[in-house]
Length: 289
Length: 212
Image (cartoon, rainbow over all chains, first blue to last red; front, side):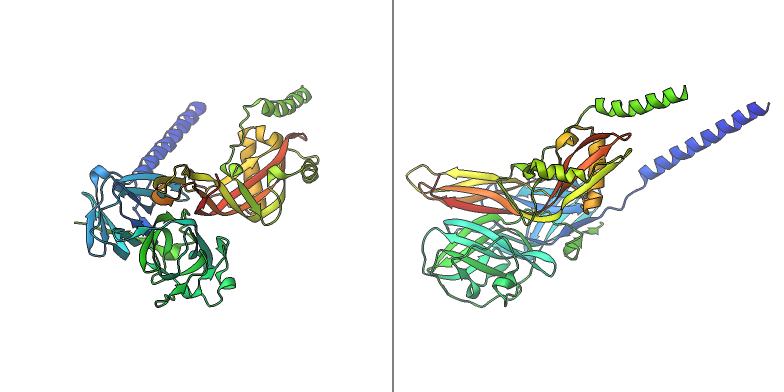
Protein backbone atom coordinates (compact mmCIF):
# COMPACT_ATOMS: atom_id res chain seq x y z
CA UNK A 1 0.00 0.00 0.00
CA UNK A 2 2.78 2.33 1.06
CA UNK A 3 4.68 1.57 -2.15
CA UNK A 4 1.62 2.29 -4.32
CA UNK A 5 1.04 5.61 -2.58
CA UNK A 6 4.70 6.55 -3.01
CA UNK A 7 4.56 5.74 -6.71
CA UNK A 8 1.34 7.74 -7.17
CA UNK A 9 2.74 10.77 -5.30
CA UNK A 10 6.01 10.58 -7.26
CA UNK A 11 4.12 10.41 -10.59
CA UNK A 12 1.95 13.40 -9.65
CA UNK A 13 5.08 15.41 -8.72
CA UNK A 14 6.73 14.56 -12.04
CA UNK A 15 3.62 15.55 -13.96
CA UNK A 16 3.40 18.81 -12.03
CA UNK A 17 7.04 19.66 -12.76
CA UNK A 18 6.61 18.76 -16.43
CA UNK A 19 3.43 20.87 -16.76
CA UNK A 20 5.02 23.83 -15.07
CA UNK A 21 8.08 23.55 -17.36
CA UNK A 22 5.89 23.45 -20.48
CA UNK A 23 3.88 26.49 -19.32
CA UNK A 24 7.09 28.39 -18.55
CA UNK A 25 8.60 27.55 -21.95
CA UNK A 26 5.45 28.71 -23.77
CA UNK A 27 5.36 31.94 -21.71
CA UNK A 28 9.05 32.70 -22.28
CA UNK A 29 8.83 32.13 -26.04
CA UNK A 30 5.74 34.32 -26.37
CA UNK A 31 7.11 37.12 -24.22
CA UNK A 32 7.65 40.09 -26.50
CA UNK A 33 11.17 41.45 -26.63
CA UNK A 34 11.22 45.23 -26.84
CA UNK A 35 12.69 46.09 -30.21
CA UNK A 36 15.69 48.37 -30.25
CA UNK A 37 17.55 49.79 -33.21
CA UNK A 38 20.74 51.79 -33.26
CA UNK A 39 22.97 53.42 -35.79
CA UNK A 40 26.51 54.62 -35.35
CA UNK A 41 27.06 58.04 -36.89
CA UNK A 42 29.39 57.54 -39.81
CA UNK A 43 30.35 59.66 -42.78
CA UNK A 44 29.66 58.28 -46.26
CA UNK A 45 30.16 60.32 -49.41
CA UNK A 46 29.14 58.71 -52.69
CA UNK A 47 29.45 59.73 -56.35
CA UNK A 48 26.23 59.35 -58.28
CA UNK A 49 26.26 57.11 -61.35
CA UNK A 50 23.46 54.95 -62.68
CA UNK A 51 23.05 51.49 -61.11
CA UNK A 52 25.31 52.23 -58.18
CA UNK A 53 24.44 51.03 -54.71
CA UNK A 54 24.77 52.53 -51.27
CA UNK A 55 24.84 50.76 -47.92
CA UNK A 56 23.67 51.40 -44.37
CA UNK A 57 24.45 49.69 -41.07
CA UNK A 58 21.80 49.18 -38.39
CA UNK A 59 22.25 47.37 -35.05
CA UNK A 60 19.29 45.62 -33.45
CA UNK A 61 18.46 43.25 -30.62
CA UNK A 62 16.05 41.38 -32.91
CA UNK A 63 17.19 38.61 -35.22
CA UNK A 64 14.06 38.68 -37.34
CA UNK A 65 12.53 42.13 -37.56
CA UNK A 66 9.61 43.46 -39.59
CA UNK A 67 11.88 46.12 -41.11
CA UNK A 68 13.85 43.42 -42.92
CA UNK A 69 11.03 42.76 -45.41
CA UNK A 70 11.06 45.19 -48.36
CA UNK A 71 7.57 44.09 -49.47
CA UNK A 72 6.19 45.24 -46.10
CA UNK A 73 8.10 48.49 -45.73
CA UNK A 74 8.82 51.81 -47.43
CA UNK A 75 12.35 53.11 -46.96
CA UNK A 76 12.79 56.88 -47.19
CA UNK A 77 16.10 58.69 -47.25
CA UNK A 78 16.24 62.35 -46.22
CA UNK A 79 19.36 64.38 -47.04
CA UNK A 80 18.86 68.02 -46.13
CA UNK A 81 15.59 68.97 -47.91
CA UNK A 82 15.88 66.11 -50.42
CA UNK A 83 13.54 63.25 -49.64
CA UNK A 84 13.53 60.09 -51.75
CA UNK A 85 12.15 56.57 -51.55
CA UNK A 86 14.89 53.95 -51.81
CA UNK A 87 14.51 51.09 -54.26
CA UNK A 88 15.89 47.57 -54.56
CA UNK A 89 16.44 47.31 -50.81
CA UNK A 90 18.16 44.18 -49.50
CA UNK A 91 19.36 43.08 -46.09
CA UNK A 92 22.07 40.80 -44.83
CA UNK A 93 21.80 39.94 -41.11
CA UNK A 94 24.72 38.78 -38.99
CA UNK A 95 25.07 38.04 -35.31
CA UNK A 96 27.27 40.54 -33.55
CA UNK A 97 27.84 39.75 -29.88
CA UNK A 98 24.49 40.21 -28.13
CA UNK A 99 23.08 42.15 -31.06
CA UNK A 100 22.42 41.68 -34.75
CA UNK A 101 24.00 43.71 -37.48
CA UNK A 102 21.72 44.58 -40.42
CA UNK A 103 23.69 45.46 -43.52
CA UNK A 104 21.23 47.22 -45.83
CA UNK A 105 21.87 48.06 -49.49
CA UNK A 106 19.74 50.08 -51.89
CA UNK A 107 20.01 51.77 -55.28
CA UNK A 108 21.71 55.14 -55.11
CA UNK A 109 19.05 57.77 -55.89
CA UNK A 110 19.71 60.12 -58.79
CA UNK A 111 20.40 63.66 -57.62
CA UNK A 112 19.91 66.92 -59.56
CA UNK A 113 23.05 68.34 -57.97
CA UNK A 114 25.39 67.50 -55.09
CA UNK A 115 23.52 67.05 -51.82
CA UNK A 116 25.01 66.62 -48.39
CA UNK A 117 23.75 66.55 -44.84
CA UNK A 118 25.68 65.81 -41.65
CA UNK A 119 22.46 64.47 -40.11
CA UNK A 120 20.85 62.45 -42.86
CA UNK A 121 17.99 60.18 -41.79
CA UNK A 122 16.50 56.90 -42.88
CA UNK A 123 12.79 56.39 -42.18
CA UNK A 124 11.27 52.94 -42.41
CA UNK A 125 7.44 52.85 -42.65
CA UNK A 126 5.25 49.78 -42.19
CA UNK A 127 1.74 49.05 -40.96
CA UNK A 128 2.90 49.02 -37.33
CA UNK A 129 5.24 51.99 -36.96
CA UNK A 130 7.67 54.38 -38.57
CA UNK A 131 11.24 53.92 -37.46
CA UNK A 132 13.49 56.95 -37.83
CA UNK A 133 17.25 56.40 -37.83
CA UNK A 134 19.99 59.01 -37.85
CA UNK A 135 22.69 58.01 -40.32
CA UNK A 136 25.23 60.74 -39.70
CA UNK A 137 26.94 62.34 -42.64
CA UNK A 138 25.72 61.42 -46.11
CA UNK A 139 26.68 63.06 -49.39
CA UNK A 140 25.85 62.23 -53.00
CA UNK A 141 28.09 64.05 -55.48
CA UNK A 142 27.16 65.17 -58.96
CA UNK A 143 30.44 64.86 -60.92
CA UNK A 144 29.24 66.61 -64.11
CA UNK A 145 31.67 69.52 -63.99
CA UNK A 146 34.65 67.51 -62.77
CA UNK A 147 37.32 65.48 -64.53
CA UNK A 148 38.33 62.08 -63.16
CA UNK A 149 41.85 62.40 -61.73
CA UNK A 150 44.57 59.85 -62.39
CA UNK A 151 46.70 58.87 -59.42
CA UNK A 152 49.33 56.26 -58.57
CA UNK A 153 48.70 55.62 -54.87
CA UNK A 154 45.93 56.47 -52.44
CA UNK A 155 45.28 55.45 -48.87
CA UNK A 156 43.97 56.87 -45.63
CA UNK A 157 46.14 57.59 -42.60
CA UNK A 158 44.66 57.04 -39.16
CA UNK A 159 45.48 58.23 -35.68
CA UNK A 160 43.87 57.83 -32.29
CA UNK A 161 41.99 60.98 -31.26
CA UNK A 162 40.31 60.86 -27.82
CA UNK A 163 40.50 57.07 -27.81
CA UNK A 164 38.97 56.61 -31.27
CA UNK A 165 40.89 55.75 -34.45
CA UNK A 166 40.04 58.55 -36.92
CA UNK A 167 41.02 59.36 -40.50
CA UNK A 168 43.48 62.22 -40.05
CA UNK A 169 44.88 62.48 -43.54
CA UNK A 170 45.45 60.93 -46.92
CA UNK A 171 48.58 59.90 -48.72
CA UNK A 172 48.22 60.67 -52.40
CA UNK A 173 50.67 60.17 -55.25
CA UNK A 174 49.54 61.85 -58.47
CA UNK A 175 50.31 60.46 -61.92
CA UNK A 176 50.93 63.85 -63.50
CA UNK A 177 52.73 66.96 -62.33
CA UNK A 178 50.82 70.07 -61.35
CA UNK A 179 51.88 73.49 -60.08
CA UNK A 180 49.22 74.43 -57.54
CA UNK A 181 46.64 72.76 -55.34
CA UNK A 182 44.15 75.34 -54.09
CA UNK A 183 41.47 73.09 -52.60
CA UNK A 184 40.98 69.51 -51.43
CA UNK A 185 37.71 68.28 -49.99
CA UNK A 186 37.15 64.76 -48.75
CA UNK A 187 33.49 64.00 -49.34
CA UNK A 188 30.93 66.38 -47.93
CA UNK A 189 32.37 66.93 -44.49
CA UNK A 190 36.13 67.19 -44.30
CA UNK A 191 38.83 69.34 -45.82
CA UNK A 192 42.50 69.07 -46.60
CA UNK A 193 44.65 71.24 -44.35
CA UNK A 194 46.93 72.23 -47.23
CA UNK A 195 49.08 74.54 -45.11
CA UNK A 196 50.48 71.48 -43.31
CA UNK A 197 50.76 69.10 -46.28
CA UNK A 198 54.07 67.20 -46.28
CA UNK A 199 55.74 66.47 -49.67
CA UNK A 200 57.72 63.36 -50.64
CA UNK A 201 56.49 61.15 -47.84
CA UNK A 202 54.37 58.01 -47.50
CA UNK A 203 53.32 57.63 -43.90
CA UNK A 204 52.22 54.33 -42.32
CA UNK A 205 48.46 53.90 -42.14
CA UNK A 206 48.40 53.91 -38.33
CA UNK A 207 50.36 56.77 -36.78
CA UNK A 208 50.45 59.23 -33.93
CA UNK A 209 49.68 62.36 -35.96
CA UNK A 210 51.16 64.65 -33.32
CA UNK A 211 54.60 63.08 -33.91
CA UNK A 212 54.50 64.44 -37.47
CA UNK A 213 52.32 67.52 -36.94
CA UNK A 214 52.47 68.70 -33.29
CA UNK A 215 49.94 71.47 -33.97
CA UNK A 216 47.40 69.22 -35.68
CA UNK A 217 43.78 69.80 -34.65
CA UNK A 218 41.14 67.53 -36.18
CA UNK A 219 38.37 70.13 -35.92
CA UNK A 220 40.32 73.14 -37.17
CA UNK A 221 39.26 73.69 -40.77
CA UNK A 222 41.65 76.12 -42.42
CA UNK A 223 40.75 79.02 -44.60
CA UNK A 224 41.73 78.98 -48.23
CA UNK A 225 45.36 78.18 -48.94
CA UNK A 226 47.34 77.70 -52.14
CA UNK A 227 49.85 74.86 -51.97
CA UNK A 228 52.71 75.21 -54.43
CA UNK A 229 53.37 71.62 -55.50
CA UNK A 230 57.02 70.55 -55.44
CA UNK A 231 56.29 66.84 -55.72
CA UNK A 232 53.64 64.43 -56.95
CA UNK A 233 53.54 62.67 -53.56
CA UNK A 234 51.99 64.28 -50.51
CA UNK A 235 50.61 63.52 -47.09
CA UNK A 236 47.66 65.88 -46.70
CA UNK A 237 46.14 66.17 -43.21
CA UNK A 238 42.35 66.31 -42.97
CA UNK A 239 40.13 68.28 -40.62
CA UNK A 240 36.40 68.16 -40.05
CA UNK A 241 33.56 70.63 -39.55
CA UNK A 242 31.57 67.80 -37.95
CA UNK A 243 33.71 64.81 -37.01
CA UNK A 244 32.28 61.43 -37.91
CA UNK A 245 33.98 58.15 -38.79
CA UNK A 246 34.72 58.20 -42.53
CA UNK A 247 33.99 54.93 -44.30
CA UNK A 248 33.45 55.89 -47.93
CA UNK A 249 34.46 59.11 -49.61
CA UNK A 250 35.20 60.81 -52.89
CA UNK A 251 37.81 63.56 -53.11
CA UNK A 252 37.49 66.85 -54.99
CA UNK A 253 40.56 68.86 -55.87
CA UNK A 254 41.30 72.08 -57.69
CA UNK A 255 44.64 71.67 -59.44
CA UNK A 256 46.01 74.50 -61.57
CA UNK A 257 42.55 76.06 -61.63
CA UNK A 258 40.81 72.90 -62.96
CA UNK A 259 38.25 70.83 -61.07
CA UNK A 260 39.10 67.16 -60.59
CA UNK A 261 37.61 64.35 -58.57
CA UNK A 262 38.70 60.95 -57.30
CA UNK A 263 35.83 58.47 -57.34
CA UNK A 264 34.21 57.10 -54.17
CA UNK A 265 36.73 55.02 -52.25
CA UNK A 266 36.21 52.57 -49.39
CA UNK A 267 38.65 53.99 -46.86
CA UNK A 268 37.77 51.80 -43.91
CA UNK A 269 36.00 48.47 -43.76
CA UNK A 270 35.93 48.31 -40.01
CA UNK A 271 32.73 47.15 -38.37
CA UNK A 272 32.43 49.73 -35.64
CA UNK A 273 32.36 48.08 -32.25
CA UNK A 274 29.43 49.70 -30.54
CA UNK A 275 31.12 49.36 -27.12
CA UNK A 276 34.02 51.52 -28.30
CA UNK A 277 31.86 53.88 -30.35
CA UNK A 278 29.02 54.14 -27.82
CA UNK A 279 29.22 57.94 -27.80
CA UNK A 280 28.43 57.82 -31.50
CA UNK A 281 25.45 55.45 -31.00
CA UNK A 282 22.04 56.88 -31.73
CA UNK A 283 18.88 55.03 -30.83
CA UNK A 284 16.19 54.79 -33.49
CA UNK A 285 12.95 56.61 -32.81
CA UNK A 286 9.55 54.92 -33.18
CA UNK A 287 6.60 56.94 -34.42
CA UNK A 288 3.17 55.34 -34.11
CA UNK A 289 0.18 56.44 -36.20
CA UNK B 1 36.49 -8.14 -10.53
CA UNK B 2 36.54 -4.54 -9.37
CA UNK B 3 40.20 -4.15 -10.41
CA UNK B 4 39.46 -5.55 -13.88
CA UNK B 5 36.58 -3.08 -14.30
CA UNK B 6 38.78 -0.12 -13.27
CA UNK B 7 41.48 -1.24 -15.70
CA UNK B 8 38.99 -1.63 -18.55
CA UNK B 9 37.51 1.78 -17.73
CA UNK B 10 40.97 3.40 -17.82
CA UNK B 11 41.80 1.72 -21.14
CA UNK B 12 38.49 2.91 -22.59
CA UNK B 13 39.34 6.49 -21.67
CA UNK B 14 42.64 6.21 -23.49
CA UNK B 15 41.47 4.34 -26.60
CA UNK B 16 38.08 5.94 -27.14
CA UNK B 17 39.31 9.51 -27.75
CA UNK B 18 41.89 8.20 -30.25
CA UNK B 19 39.18 6.59 -32.32
CA UNK B 20 36.71 9.47 -32.34
CA UNK B 21 36.21 11.40 -35.55
CA UNK B 22 39.03 13.84 -36.00
CA UNK B 23 38.17 17.42 -36.92
CA UNK B 24 40.79 19.61 -38.43
CA UNK B 25 41.04 23.09 -37.01
CA UNK B 26 39.60 25.43 -39.62
CA UNK B 27 42.21 26.94 -41.90
CA UNK B 28 42.18 30.67 -41.51
CA UNK B 29 42.28 33.45 -44.04
CA UNK B 30 45.20 35.28 -42.45
CA UNK B 31 47.57 32.46 -43.46
CA UNK B 32 47.09 33.53 -47.09
CA UNK B 33 48.02 37.18 -46.48
CA UNK B 34 51.02 38.29 -48.50
CA UNK B 35 52.66 39.91 -45.48
CA UNK B 36 52.31 39.95 -41.70
CA UNK B 37 54.82 41.93 -39.66
CA UNK B 38 54.72 41.40 -35.90
CA UNK B 39 56.16 43.99 -33.53
CA UNK B 40 57.81 41.07 -31.69
CA UNK B 41 57.77 37.28 -31.76
CA UNK B 42 56.75 34.92 -34.55
CA UNK B 43 53.73 33.36 -36.13
CA UNK B 44 53.13 29.71 -35.35
CA UNK B 45 54.08 28.68 -38.87
CA UNK B 46 57.52 30.29 -38.40
CA UNK B 47 58.45 28.47 -35.19
CA UNK B 48 61.47 26.21 -35.67
CA UNK B 49 61.30 22.62 -34.42
CA UNK B 50 63.69 23.55 -31.58
CA UNK B 51 61.53 26.52 -30.54
CA UNK B 52 58.42 24.33 -30.59
CA UNK B 53 60.11 21.56 -28.58
CA UNK B 54 61.44 24.06 -26.01
CA UNK B 55 58.00 25.55 -25.54
CA UNK B 56 56.33 22.13 -25.32
CA UNK B 57 58.67 21.15 -22.48
CA UNK B 58 56.70 23.60 -20.32
CA UNK B 59 53.59 21.48 -20.85
CA UNK B 60 55.14 18.08 -20.04
CA UNK B 61 54.46 16.18 -16.84
CA UNK B 62 52.28 13.61 -15.11
CA UNK B 63 48.85 15.10 -15.59
CA UNK B 64 45.44 13.56 -15.51
CA UNK B 65 42.48 14.83 -17.56
CA UNK B 66 43.88 18.32 -17.94
CA UNK B 67 45.09 20.78 -20.58
CA UNK B 68 48.46 22.44 -20.09
CA UNK B 69 48.95 25.74 -21.90
CA UNK B 70 52.18 27.64 -22.38
CA UNK B 71 51.68 31.05 -24.04
CA UNK B 72 54.67 32.20 -26.12
CA UNK B 73 53.34 35.48 -27.57
CA UNK B 74 50.57 37.39 -25.81
CA UNK B 75 48.54 40.09 -27.62
CA UNK B 76 51.36 41.13 -29.91
CA UNK B 77 50.50 43.90 -32.38
CA UNK B 78 51.11 43.33 -36.07
CA UNK B 79 50.37 44.91 -39.43
CA UNK B 80 49.32 43.03 -42.52
CA UNK B 81 48.91 43.22 -46.27
CA UNK B 82 46.22 40.94 -47.61
CA UNK B 83 45.95 39.21 -50.94
CA UNK B 84 45.01 41.38 -53.91
CA UNK B 85 41.32 42.25 -53.93
CA UNK B 86 41.30 43.47 -57.52
CA UNK B 87 43.83 43.97 -60.29
CA UNK B 88 43.67 45.27 -63.85
CA UNK B 89 46.35 45.48 -66.51
CA UNK B 90 46.00 47.94 -69.36
CA UNK B 91 47.85 46.26 -72.20
CA UNK B 92 46.22 48.47 -74.81
CA UNK B 93 48.01 51.42 -76.33
CA UNK B 94 45.63 54.02 -74.87
CA UNK B 95 44.57 55.29 -71.45
CA UNK B 96 41.34 53.73 -70.23
CA UNK B 97 38.74 54.64 -67.67
CA UNK B 98 38.00 51.44 -65.83
CA UNK B 99 35.01 50.86 -63.55
CA UNK B 100 35.03 47.94 -61.16
CA UNK B 101 32.71 46.67 -58.46
CA UNK B 102 35.07 45.96 -55.60
CA UNK B 103 33.83 43.36 -53.15
CA UNK B 104 35.52 42.98 -49.82
CA UNK B 105 34.53 40.82 -46.92
CA UNK B 106 34.52 42.87 -43.75
CA UNK B 107 36.18 40.89 -41.07
CA UNK B 108 36.21 41.26 -37.33
CA UNK B 109 36.47 37.68 -36.33
CA UNK B 110 39.05 36.09 -34.11
CA UNK B 111 40.75 33.36 -36.09
CA UNK B 112 41.99 30.30 -34.25
CA UNK B 113 44.50 27.87 -35.66
CA UNK B 114 46.28 24.80 -34.28
CA UNK B 115 49.28 22.69 -35.30
CA UNK B 116 50.89 19.36 -34.52
CA UNK B 117 48.80 16.38 -33.43
CA UNK B 118 46.45 18.89 -31.73
CA UNK B 119 44.97 19.91 -35.06
CA UNK B 120 44.00 16.31 -35.85
CA UNK B 121 42.40 15.68 -32.48
CA UNK B 122 38.69 15.65 -31.66
CA UNK B 123 36.81 18.92 -31.94
CA UNK B 124 35.99 18.76 -28.23
CA UNK B 125 39.68 18.90 -27.35
CA UNK B 126 40.27 21.82 -29.70
CA UNK B 127 37.37 23.73 -28.11
CA UNK B 128 38.78 23.14 -24.64
CA UNK B 129 42.27 24.22 -25.72
CA UNK B 130 40.78 27.35 -27.30
CA UNK B 131 38.94 28.28 -24.10
CA UNK B 132 41.96 27.58 -21.84
CA UNK B 133 44.41 29.36 -24.14
CA UNK B 134 42.11 32.37 -24.46
CA UNK B 135 41.78 32.62 -20.68
CA UNK B 136 45.54 32.29 -20.11
CA UNK B 137 46.42 34.67 -22.94
CA UNK B 138 43.73 37.29 -22.16
CA UNK B 139 42.21 36.82 -25.58
CA UNK B 140 38.63 37.96 -25.89
CA UNK B 141 36.70 36.06 -28.52
CA UNK B 142 33.26 36.20 -26.97
CA UNK B 143 32.28 38.84 -29.51
CA UNK B 144 33.29 36.63 -32.38
CA UNK B 145 31.13 37.21 -35.37
CA UNK B 146 29.64 34.10 -36.81
CA UNK B 147 29.65 35.65 -40.25
CA UNK B 148 31.01 38.81 -41.79
CA UNK B 149 29.27 40.63 -44.65
CA UNK B 150 30.47 41.66 -48.09
CA UNK B 151 30.90 45.37 -48.68
CA UNK B 152 30.52 46.24 -52.35
CA UNK B 153 31.48 49.57 -53.86
CA UNK B 154 31.79 50.54 -57.48
CA UNK B 155 34.90 52.60 -58.17
CA UNK B 156 36.23 54.24 -61.32
CA UNK B 157 39.93 54.64 -62.20
CA UNK B 158 42.02 56.14 -64.96
CA UNK B 159 44.61 53.58 -66.02
CA UNK B 160 47.32 54.71 -68.38
CA UNK B 161 48.51 52.60 -71.31
CA UNK B 162 51.00 50.01 -70.10
CA UNK B 163 50.01 50.40 -66.43
CA UNK B 164 48.42 48.09 -63.93
CA UNK B 165 46.34 48.82 -60.87
CA UNK B 166 45.84 46.74 -57.76
CA UNK B 167 43.55 47.13 -54.78
CA UNK B 168 44.40 45.33 -51.56
CA UNK B 169 43.67 45.44 -47.85
CA UNK B 170 46.00 46.49 -45.09
CA UNK B 171 45.49 46.98 -41.39
CA UNK B 172 46.35 45.85 -37.90
CA UNK B 173 46.20 42.55 -36.07
CA UNK B 174 46.61 41.27 -32.52
CA UNK B 175 48.28 37.86 -32.31
CA UNK B 176 48.52 35.45 -29.39
CA UNK B 177 50.10 32.03 -29.76
CA UNK B 178 51.72 29.26 -27.77
CA UNK B 179 51.66 25.51 -27.22
CA UNK B 180 49.25 23.13 -25.55
CA UNK B 181 49.18 19.53 -24.42
CA UNK B 182 46.00 17.59 -23.73
CA UNK B 183 46.23 14.90 -21.07
CA UNK B 184 44.08 11.88 -20.56
CA UNK B 185 44.60 9.38 -17.75
CA UNK B 186 48.32 10.28 -17.15
CA UNK B 187 48.80 10.05 -20.88
CA UNK B 188 49.50 12.92 -23.28
CA UNK B 189 46.75 12.55 -25.84
CA UNK B 190 47.88 15.26 -28.27
CA UNK B 191 49.95 18.39 -28.33
CA UNK B 192 50.91 21.22 -30.61
CA UNK B 193 50.77 24.94 -31.23
CA UNK B 194 47.74 27.24 -31.12
CA UNK B 195 47.24 30.74 -32.42
CA UNK B 196 44.62 33.51 -32.12
CA UNK B 197 44.61 36.30 -34.70
CA UNK B 198 42.24 39.25 -34.35
CA UNK B 199 41.84 41.81 -37.11
CA UNK B 200 41.53 45.20 -35.42
CA UNK B 201 41.76 47.57 -38.39
CA UNK B 202 40.98 47.03 -42.06
CA UNK B 203 41.67 49.58 -44.81
CA UNK B 204 41.84 49.56 -48.58
CA UNK B 205 44.73 50.84 -50.65
CA UNK B 206 44.93 51.50 -54.41
CA UNK B 207 48.33 51.33 -56.13
CA UNK B 208 49.23 51.79 -59.79
CA UNK B 209 52.37 50.49 -61.43
CA UNK B 210 54.04 50.43 -64.79
CA UNK B 211 55.47 46.99 -64.01
CA UNK B 212 53.31 43.95 -64.69
